[in-house]
Length: 269
Image 1: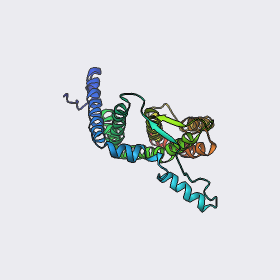
Image 2: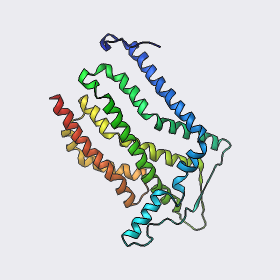
Image 3: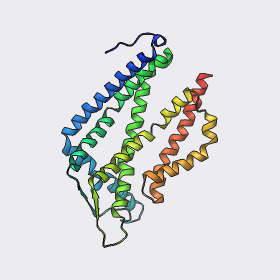
Image 4: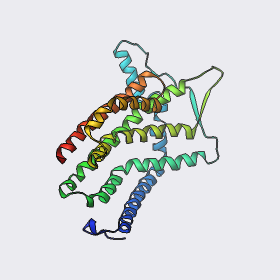
């Protein structure tokens, strides 16, 4: 394993590539390690987590039902059944789902370490006063990511499953969803939300390198709001309530990103 030179300015292009290779390798090994642990705990991962939103006793459905009764809407938002089944129609369907779910779980669990490797790679090019923010960067980024994962799992995922699972064009048709389709929806909802919640961090770095300014973010805020609504429409069921629920935190994150950009510009000046 190559040792990084103390002065990043003395490193050649090949040295940087070698350094990057080891950071990527460490991240990959961390994902594989935690993915292997997730692979062993198959019953918990699938029965409790993956298939959790399929149960009418899921936390989100019970909360909606309680809110419905609290506001005097009786059982308007209570989920009484999930009229669909999940099937595997290919020989390697269940094994493939097990492998990819374990990898996705490994990535989610090891995300703080992956961030640490990313920071270790870029830190030699930072000023000394910027390097001291490493812990804060990893903590805040991880917090945003895990918050997004929870939002995707407890909000986007159950809303999508409930809507699509109950949607029908005829009583002659019974919903039999393929295992890969169901898990793909859960995985996409969780990972997409986790990455979307990294928006303030992305804006921070874009402002840092001069590609984004607060004025640009404010100027194109209307277009950004349209983009948020389009994004919410893509990752949620096509009903207005679900889209609004998803759009609200994204709009808040965009506004936070504007303030972060202002702080970066102020410190630079």
